Length: 593
Ligand code: ADP
Ligand code: SF4
Image 1 (cartoon, rainbow, N blue to C red):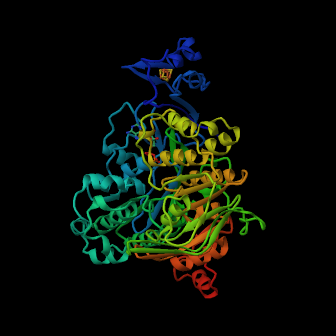
Image 2 (cartoon, protein in one colour):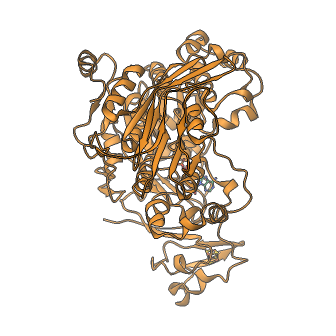
């Protein structure tokens, strides 16, 4: 086993003018007179053929700009694209299937966006040949006789038209002006305006300007606009971000409805319950972020997701993660029997000028406990959070958090900080940075080290989320409140964040209250659940904290989906509506399991 060696240079870090060219100076090959490392036109080049893989340059570079790795699988010759000499390489690409929904799951930074750009014709792949000018004809030729070759041929011949719902929906209002109705009327090539407005419940926001929409609303509008187009290929890049569980299910159903013999649909998604529900086939993508990525063969959605969780890909005989992401038959009632209450609140009422009213049943959060708030958007979760943190005062009732120090991670992620992540964290959590426990349990899990020297402003949404979770957990506090920590994180990071949160709560007299929409993340995190019900934007009701089984059961009943357990991994799976298991679950009233 073991394949080719890759030397990848981070061009944002490498600066041959500022360093002492340590990589070259210490390279044993260079010392022997071979040009394994050289500077060409001001750019550092490592010759992978000559490189012996000793790793000297990796260690000596003052800016940590070089990675040298051996490919774990025999994927040599399967290069789809390489971003220039010593750039990131993508091996293989998902196969679009007309008549099916194909999913792509995997870590951030291993080439999903690159694959999408190639399949949508935005990026002409160079087959890894960075010094040659490759034509589309050569690309078609390279894959001739395969489904992929056929696809590229049609793509080049402009026989397939592609629409892509982008991941960064926050950028939409910057490029499109006007209100929701105009946008959706304009995009409506298939005359499905009424259908989509009804399915995604968009009536109330039709006359709103795009710039006034919340993240969740923008997401729905972006999905709707893509749905309305009359295309051959539909690509949905992370359609569930910012959406509540009901909205996620509505979007999933809508996307499935698109599926026809003459259409191919590709979905990238980190919410595994959504991915499982939405897709017929799944490609797993693995690799090392910013170094290389490998796309697996297509698998059934169940298999593909299990492969991702397991961290082992049988097709390539590669273990791409040391440990599986487990649902180790989770102790349903993890909460210790006798825990003292850290936070306690009586029945609460809060209304906003008669337009929205929230009632909250009495509740508490015990020491060491993680309580998760679950329910639709616009139902009052953030309002309860703000009452718990003291930012809002209830009209009726009391919250007992006197003397508790509170740390609060808000839902929205702000980039308005001048300076590096290191500076930011030194300012926010100087003490935690020195703690061995914190370094092991939080920083290492969330891989903050690799972000330390980046400007906070330049981080991707997922990277920013990791930094904000770290800043929240590192604060010296008793009560930790986190609003949607899973947004923008890949599955690995969701698990890592869940573990980090739990570990910190194991400390003396600490507890957490977390708002979360990802069902699998809820499962990883929660001891108990506060369920919200009502009518979004009008009235909301929060129940007493329930144990996870009852809470999930009620929650799923509300959302109208049923779950079963995957026998192999123990992960919860959404039953397809109308299936035998679905009917059985409904009949017995056991929506969860
Ligand atoms: P994902 O979508 O899975 O997060 P991407 O496809 O965006 O991953 O990127 C994978 C890697 O490719 C990035 O980490 C980056 O190092 C590299 N990359 C992306 N775009 C470019 C580019 N235009 N030039 C050079 N490298 C790039
Ligand atoms: Fe200098 Fe590091 Fe770039 Fe080599 S890789 S030229 S040592 S910055």
